[in-house]
Image 1 (cartoon, rainbow, N blue to C red):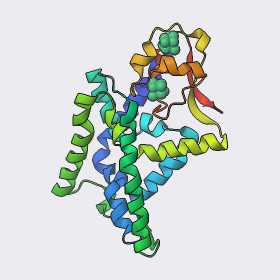
Image 2: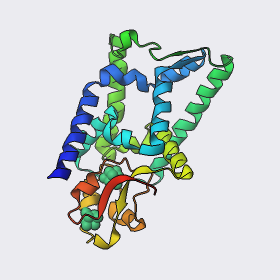
Image 3: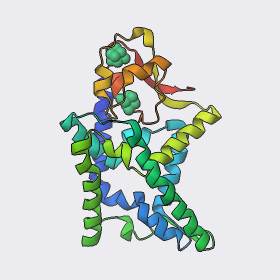
Image 4: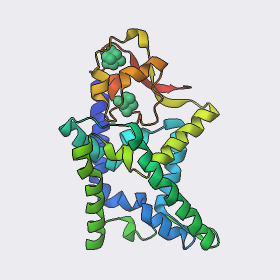
Amino acid sequence: MKTAKRQRIRKAILLASFALFPVTIFYFSPYLIVYGAFQGIIAGSAIAFTLQLLSAIFLRRAICGWICPAGGMQEFEGDALEKPSKLGRRLLIKWIIWVPWVASIVIGFVVAGGIVSVDPFFHIEYGISVTSIEAMVIYLIIIALFFIPNLFLGKRAMCHCICWMAPFMIIGEKIGAALHVPQLHVKSTPESCISCGLCDNACPMSLPVSELLEEGAIAHSECIQCGACCDACRRDALKLGFGKM
Ligand code: SF4
Ligand code: SF4
């Protein structure tokens, strides 16, 4: 009962975050960060992505599992679809997008002669993202970009394939691991597992949890620390907690 409550709380937070997405979407904008860079301005999304990287040192990808509005929308979609996503080489696509994009940000600041100012509300009127027809069109395009492909590719497929924020958090969690700091992660007790597969079915990221748990912890970089596998397991073989991995 206690664990099911955790997932209800998580889903409620994700729903609230998605409801606020018209307000917050430009703070996650991959375009405004580049546009700002070429003027030497650190935009709101640059601050947001830096905070995501720093948080991941200790929380790994918990932002994806607990707060991300686009992740939340995809998770509700995934719950309705119940179609697992394939992993494999698809995971590389986001890096193929991310590397040249980050390079363009660096080039922007070089061309601008360095950092001139910090403006968290750069091109965000009154601090609210969607305040015009144009902004609404951009919002709907982003929603479609994260929603429609999943209908064919499965649960949270766009988290795996195109999310430009996920690499920041993957880098953050690798830094944390290299520094040996305590991190939020799923610990496992393989001896307690009866291979029922409930955790595999519960994972919103379609991870083969019952195979990964053999290592004593779920170390996969696509794990978003949602705890759904822990809450599905009836043998207490999985636990979400802090500690060194
Ligand atoms: S739900 Fe628990 S017992 Fe079942 S496969 Fe997963 S870890 Fe093993
Ligand atoms: S392995 Fe567990 S904690 Fe990680 S994403 Fe899957 S269900 Fe969530």
